[in-house]
Length: 158
Image (cartoon, rainbow, N blue to C red; front, side, top):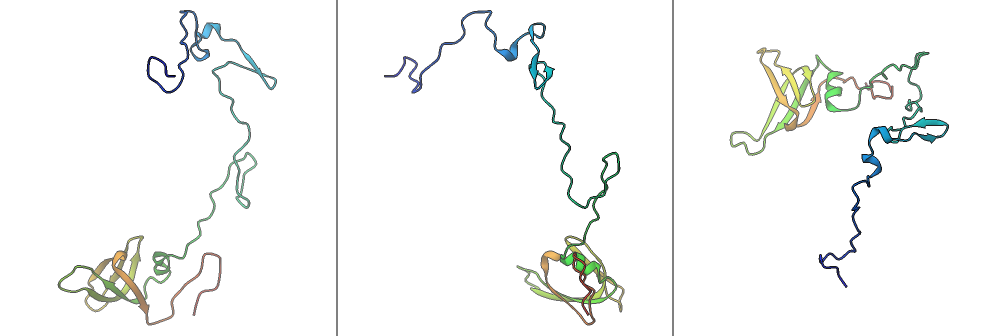
C-alpha cells in the first residue's frame, strides 16, 4: 500500500525539533575533538596523507627529495623521422580529395622542417618553399639512405 504522497518508497519522519542539528551543521563552538590514531582532530578537518608520491625507477633524485625531469625520448613518428633527415632531398606523394583540378600531386624538395601536422620543403632550383599538411601525405621517398634511430637506442639504418 502506498503513502498519501504517492511515492513508491516509504517516507521517513523529518526532524521536528528546532534544536536537532546534523553533525555537519553543528556550530564551531560546540565541536568536540576526535581522537584518530593517537592524534586529535576536529570533526571537519580532513586527514592528510604522509606517504610521498611514487617515483618511477631510474629518475634522479636530490637528497631533499626533489626529482629531475626524465629525458625525453624521440618516438617513431613521421615528424620525428623527418627531423632526423633535415637537409635531404625527399619526394612527397600527396592526395587531395574532392579537388577537381588535381587529386594527387608530387612534391620534391629539400626537407627544411617537420611539425606535428606539417612539412616544409624547398625547391633547390626555384627557391620556392612549400608548407604541406601531413593530413594529405601518402608516403615519402628518398634517393639516399635515411637516418632512423629508434627510441630504444638501435643503430641507424644504412
